[in-house]
Length: 315
Image: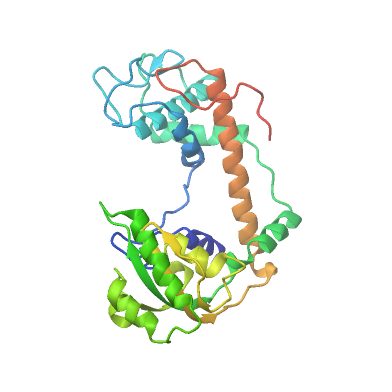
């Protein structure tokens, strides 16, 4: 299993209707070109754009970059697509300024061709520098994220799910879950009581098996569930009933860990190249974000708001 697999799997989400411990198997490949990586780095700017959330309503002021309209007459775009076009136009205009692309004769932003994007890739490679991570930085990252790098770990788990569904009284549901947890936490409770309550109360199909989910890996779990079971120092290696409810997007879980397989941690030497690649990607994304914010800060932007900084780029 590679470093990328390990880190990406930690943030996998469960499929629709899952109890919160299922795996959807989804994932996305890293952007392949400098142009695409820049677009990915710009995702953090999307929250600062004040375009209509309904997505197909034109802004009050026609959006434009340095006088070049982003929308053709009568055209509308979802907010996310409008942001992507704005960033693409900023990059195109910068390439024109540097003499790498010809000037555009029209007053509406042109669609970038594959050749245009290749030119922008070369511009970004030349203009945006990002430092290579040092071996010491890679070692520190490894030391700080050992739980994520551990392979082969698994937990045998049972749970009782109190599902949050439309219209449910969430405070009342949480109180019922807390009451059941309090009962199970009593030292005098009979061992079979967990299975009985799971059959009576759980909104998960596993209730028919006493709440038993079997052996789970981090990749099998929703992120919130995986964090509790695998990535918290105070609980990741312990068995027994969790002393607090586990909150996930699906509801409240009473969780009992029956067995732990701790897995093993690969040596730093086995992972250092992959860690360095990940740190380099993070550094590159940061530098690209700074570059784009500088372009925004130096541009005349109308009809939408972008996060900009007119100060010189700091690498």
